[in-house]
Image 1 (cartoon, helix red, strand yellow):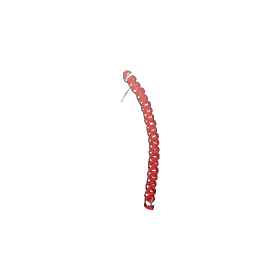
Image 2 (cartoon, one colour; image 1 turned 120 degrees about the horizontal axis):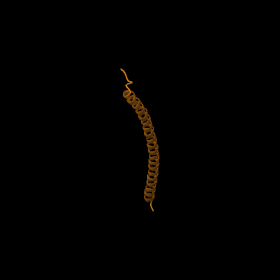
Image 3 (cartoon, one colour; image 1 turned 90 degrees about the horizontal axis):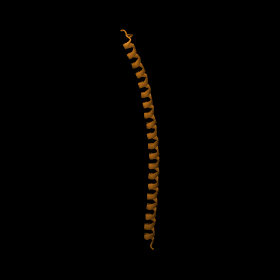
Amino acid sequence: MTVTEIVAIASVVIALISLIITVVRLFNKLTVTAAELRLSTQKLTEAINDINGWKRDVDDKLGKHETRISILEHEGGIRA
């Protein structure tokens, strides 16, 4: 083997190692991004559940007020 062949082989080996390192780094970033996305989705789901709970509370309160108004209207108790 000549020096040129050895240098060429060494260059290819270095390039392959560099490529492997780049792929591993990219995979790690994708893994972190997927975990962050999962966490964001979980937080969004919790927020939606909170909003739905508040909506139910408001609907319950509005329903009670509407019932009271209906009873008062029926009994002639609402006056302007």
